[in-house]
Image (tube, rainbow, N blue to C red):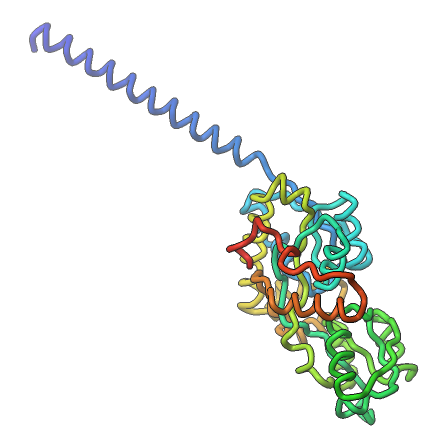
Length: 324
């Protein structure tokens, strides 16, 4: 090999080495950038009153779906839906799951929140009565004592409306699930409007379900977010809903799977037997039932619970084309 050839080969080797070093350094920088980006997690605080109706929240957390979308989701436990709403309104949390009427009434009264997604549909709350009850048709509800969590609960609204059309106004005793079952067993009420898993608990105890069809077209539960967080972190909220959507698909594929039932029992304390009995009734999904929620708003307006209907202004514009 000539001196010239040797010099040329040496030069080529140096150039090749420099190129490889440059590519290696560039690759390291890209990996470092990816690592740093992954380290920046979006924190979202959820206010939640434990219930199997919010199972998708718990499944997403337990199965690592929030981690997949780089979310740090903290759950602050509260006693009921109203407390969850109030914590978000006051700035103590960012998001809450609740009965839709809780959110609709708050938005109609000026609360700085919006609905960003549905949780599940339809409403699975039903009327349960003793096996020997004289109630068999809507007309039989006239002047009966019926337990129900609130006159603004969508199931109570739907049964009240159906009974009125049948000329059978009943008396509502405001009792939550556990106390309502106790009153039913004690005979102080003629029937109780119960949601899952309380409905399954009562059913397994021998009580019978009536008028399931009354609520089957009513949307149930929504995910609602603070206007503040929508303005500052809409992308984080969209990732939250992506994680929830994945959780929905997992639950719906087998709502009675051992791991799903365990998560439901661990988070809510509900009896495993009741979860297994009624978990497949919870049809989770993120698509907002716009017409159904607007009809609920009509009922709230007609009953004097709100002064004006919020209409589609109750839904987050940032989620237009995504969940509604």
